[in-house]
Picture 1 (cartoon, rainbow over the protein chains, first blue to last red):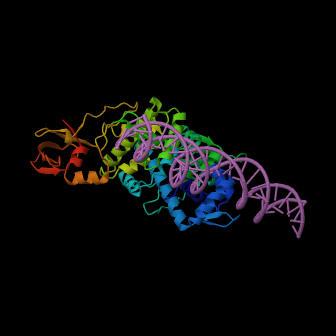
Picture 2: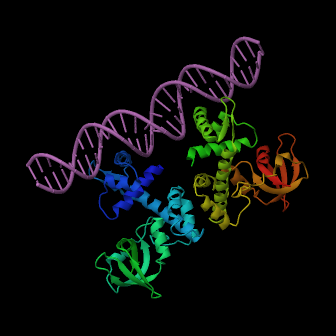
Length: 217
Length: 217
DNA sequence: TTCATAATTTAGATAAGTCTAAATTTTTTA
DNA sequence: TAAAAAATTTAGACTTATCTAAATTATGAA
C-alpha cells in the first residue's frame, strides 16, 4: 500500500497530466499547496517505487502502475461524492472535502459494493466520469461555454472548477447539470457571455464562468 | 483536530477503561500492538492536550473532553459497520477493519446524515449500542452465557470478541444475533455449555465461546 | 551566445510517531 | 522489609514528510 501523501501526489500528477505532457515540480507544488523542495523529495520516492518517470529538471509522468493507482483514487473520490449527494442529500458544493478524505479508504471490495449499491453511476455530481472497477471510463467530450458561438446550444454537463464558491454561484443562477442553454450574445469587449435558459430567462456570465462551465452538445 | 494516532489511543483507552478504572501503559501497548515506550510518549502528549489524566507510573483515565472524542469515534465506527452490513451486504465478520479506517473520517455532518439515512440504528452488527449525536447511549445489560445456569434462556444479542474467526464460527453454528437459546447443561469438568436452539438443535460450546457470547434475558 | 532569471534540486532542520536499550519506579515475593 | 521481578519511563535513534536557505541547472531575452 501507499501512504496518504503518496496517493495525493499521484492524483495531483494525474490531474495535471491531462492538459500537458510532463508535469513540472512547481505545478505539483502549487496544486498540493506545498514547496518545490518537498515535491522533489517525494518524486524521488515515487520514482524508486516505479510509479512515475522522473529525470532531474525534466518533470514527471505517471507509469502505468502509477496511473492505475491514481485512477483508482479518482474512482473512489467520485463514487463517494455521488453517494454523499444522492444518498445523504448533500449539495454538490459540499462534498469535495469529505470525498478527499474518503478516497483513501483502502478496501477495493468496499468501493465495488458501493458502486453496485448505487447502481453503477456514470458521472459524479459535477459531471466527471466515474471509472469502472477496471479503471476504464470515457474521457469527457465536453466543451467550455467560452468555446461556443452565438446560437449554439447544449446541455450543462460539467464544471472545471470544483470550488464551493463557484458551485454556489451556479446554483444561485440555476446553471446546474442537465439545464439546457443557448448562447444569445458574446460581448466583444470582455468576452462575457449572455445565455438563454429553457424558460427564456437571460443570464449574463463572465468570461471566467464561461471558461469553467462545460456543455454537452 | 486530532491525529489518527491520537484518536486510536483515545479509543483504546476508552475500551480498556470499561472493565477497569485506570488503564496501564502495558495494556494500551498490547491493545495497539505497539511498545510501552511509544505509549508513554503519546500519553504525555494527550495529557498536555488535557484529554487524559496522567501521572507517571500510575496509569491513565480519560478526561470528559477525551471521552467525548472517544465516544464520537466509536459512534462513527459502529454506524459505518451498520452501513456496511445493512446497505452493502457485508457479513458481520468482514466489517471491522474497514470501519477502523472509516471511523476517522472527520465530518460530523456526514455522520449525522448517515445516521439519519439508516434511520437511527441502535445497535451495530455485533450488538454494540450506537451512541447518538450527543454521545449518549444505553450501556448494554447483556450477560455472557458463561454466567447463566441450566434452564436459563434468552436471546443472543452481542459478542465480546469481534475477530473474524470467532464470528465465522458463530455463523457456522448459527449462533447469530436474535437467535433464542436455552441452557441445557453445563459440563462440570471444563465449563463447556450445551445449548438448545429454538428448533431443538443442541449445540456444544466451549468455555471460551460461552465467555464471549452475550445474551439478553 | 551569454547572462539574468526562473525552475529545480540539495543540504540541513524540524515534528510526529515509532523503536531499542538502559534507567527508574513500583510491585511482588520470600 | 529487602531483593527480585515487572512495569514504566527516559535517552537516543530512525522514518516520513515537511520546511528554509543555498546551490545548481535550464531558459529566454538581448
